[in-house]
Length: 207
Image (tube, rainbow, N blue to C red):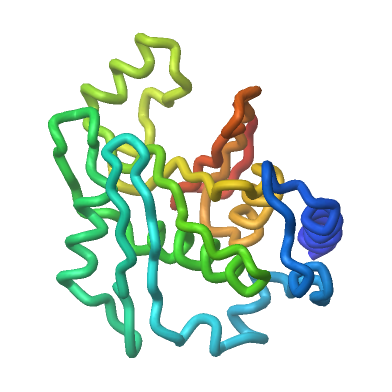
């Protein structure tokens, strides 16, 4: 609990300080109270978890963009789930797809829905979703960070980014869900780095 509170204080400070590339926070966002602990929100903010779940995502590699209602009245909508599995396919590996872990979708949705409360409504960028073993090996040979037994190959991981949102804040938020592994990947370019989120063991690393 102490670590999560420390994260929330840090994230609020960073957000209020304007750690958004090339954009300014809306005045209403700056006036908000510190966000609640997202892990405790399962108990304290039941409405957050039972409302319909809409994911708005962009796949930069393919140019696709979609806004999908995939969960309503306590159930996953099968056609929407299939569409999300397609969107998270291996765009560099013959467009092959796999069943994506619903828990991963929950983490992606929760992250987007949480920041939307504070005026950040940009789509979630999916840099990498499912990877075939061949694609994963190719990345390793190219020197791209990719674990030999990557959970991307099981449909249990995604590399994500929210445009203009500091990666430390995003990664800390994903970590506060306590749903799995979180990797922080920093890059010195205009877009910055990205965050790896998976549904494996709880762990954190930097790459």
